[in-house]
Length: 232
Image 1 (tube, rainbow, N blue to C red):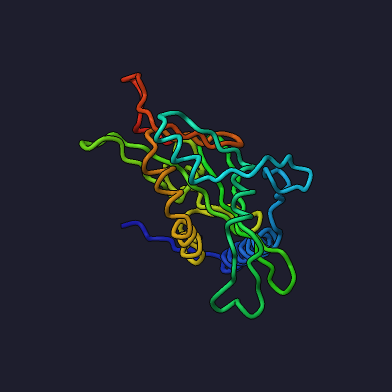
Image 2 (tube, rainbow, N blue to C red; image 1 turned 135 degrees about the vertical axis):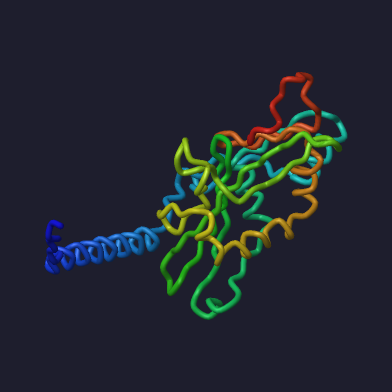
């Protein structure tokens, strides 16, 4: 029988690999904290800049109710939604951070196929932003069209359904599961606007989120080919 030959793996090589992994992990962690500490640039959001064109205030609840009763589509612009939120929403920081943080404002950014809800806080005087994405999914069921609002903004990669984009801490884009600590704060917002949410998302047959605007239509599509299984 041939003699077996054994060699010891060089400890120095394994040590260098571990050091490189630790260094890379530390650098990644520091960079993540850096981007988390940097608030989003909100100047692209309609209604944020003082120079934004201010239209006469509309009663959103009345606008939606009239559209449903009259059977016609209604368009709410990003600027209009944010100006309405600024008038109607009184923000207050609670919990453990109430002594050193203030909740300044909530903004909505409308993109093609999704919306981003951004909360602006000040912690020890410094601005900090956290956001969550929203997608509207409409499905055809036995009782008609069912509308769901999901707290996600689509997948990170076109060929992989998971993980999905949850939102952003500062400028850092994170998966959905990383927003568990702040999800309760976002879920409280619909409770404050129960009537508007009911009229806009439960009574409307078709909902489309587009760049800078939200289009709501109480009428069913006349085309049988409408793919309601796809998110708008």
